[in-house]
Image (cartoon, rainbow, N blue to C red):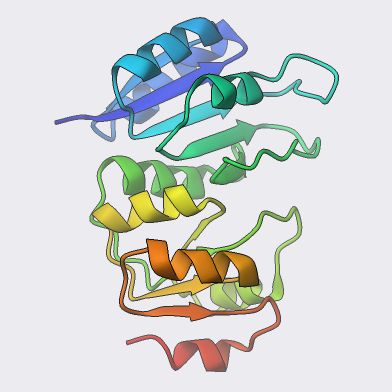
Length: 205
């Protein structure tokens, strides 16, 4: 069965740019620039993820993400992408914030992880979003340790249903308390942004 991806793109002409990308990965895309259509079909069928390609969102204008969250209690990952350096508007239910084409490899890994599964990252990292790369992520990148970063507890839970990371690290103290109860994994640890990679390696197989 093909994985199902819902995509809202405020620019209708831009939808075609994603068709081949998802088709090459055995993913079925339903895309629209009409949020009403997105909400209608999301109620009728449960996609593997919801992607918002937004370039112009700001506090005083129509927010499709807020409208979507108000209309649907989404129990699947929400991904926001844009292609410039304007700061993202934060939403509590968003699992990933990405900039394309810079983050295309990460975007590919994320969409395949949710829709197809079978990934074996060494680490799943549940943390809060920051425009700046934290020291722990710099160390993971420098040491070529594969990790899957996510900012939503719901999305983390969904990721773990289809993928098998060696270890789950949770950065936020409050998130750690609830996630330990919610997430199904036998190796869950708290980690802070300054933690040394040598300590982290102790928890890896």
